[in-house]
Image (cartoon, rainbow, N blue to C red; front, side, top):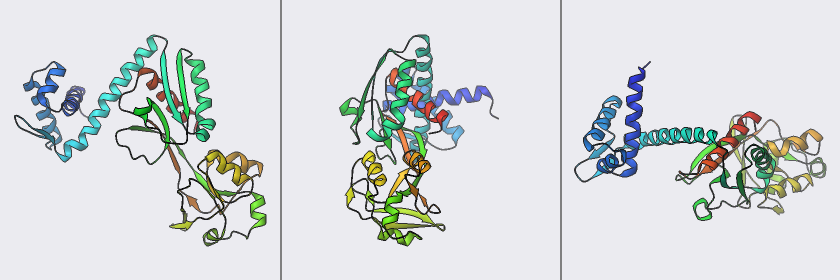
Length: 300
């Protein structure tokens, strides 16, 4: 195991490297850190020597990252952010948290998971004001002034930080009424002949895994919706089959209002993330960490 002194030196060098990348030059980083350019260069050279790879190409005017430096940058920036968050978290414990947090989440998942957690958060931190935008659309966080967003993945915007909130199983379900009215379902191939509640409107197929192979099933149906709440209501009413997350299916399955279709096949899980821009306020960090902890403890 590396000695503590060596680890501390490497952590300091990583923080300096992250600052160099953010500032765009050794000189600018040195000014921000209150160090000389020579000291900054020394730490980067020592880091490169320990890693055994060059992290940057530089001369008197230009600075650019090598492929290794670009990959290592992510870890260094994460180190700085985590350290900053830890210090700010301790500051919050010294005084009652205040301020406002602006959060957006979908109507459906938000109503089932996020809103109950927010009520607990409010009882614990009554001085923090909450602005909650319930919307199924992906809002522009910067333009709308939103600090936290709950979104289903995978995520495309690399400028946002994402923490996985829940890894939710999904399954194919239909109501007993629908299954009585339509032909029996005995194999994956039979799915093509059935009606679906289509969500979201862009959905054209569903991929299922059967006997170790992925099979893409085209979907057709008379109900198309952009609302997860509507999807569940239409499935319960017997309008068709749908791929449902476990948080929607569990209670109706237990009561007999829904039946799991072809339980031997698997469908892709739904990953839901808590997303924010790189810099958020202390109250938003407090709510972010609270939601992540709530998800872990309650095993969403």
